[in-house]
Amino acid sequence: MKILIAGANGRIGTRLIPLLKANGHTPIAMIRDHNQKPKFDQLGIDTVIGDLENPLDNAVKNIDAIIFAAGSGSSTGRDKTILVDHIGAIRLATTAEFAGIRRFIMISSI
Image (cartoon, rainbow, N blue to C red; front, side, top):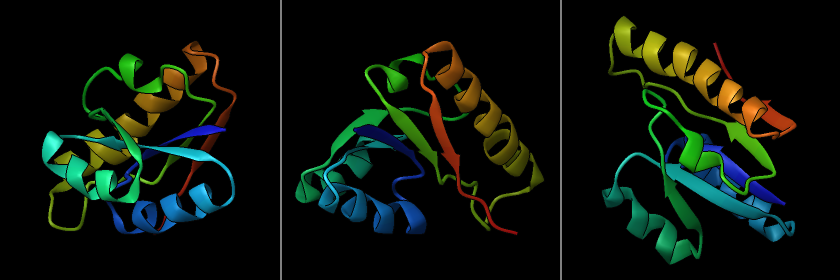
């Protein structure tokens, strides 16, 4: 199963990707910029550029499932928390729904 990981470069995504690969899945790391790509190239993981603050149609092409493990981070303000953690999650879930992706897992913490 091809699984898109939003937040692939974070702590949870970094730990999750090898587990998915070891269990026969094909994780796809969604990254915001090309500077993050070498990390995933070393792991043999494909990447796709996607930013939760922008349209995500290209990021979900040919994807079977999505895991949302993204977050704005503790060093950002309330505005980024709303844009990424709230609106970005809605944007990705809505994009997945329109693309016919029926599996969407959201990882969250308080």
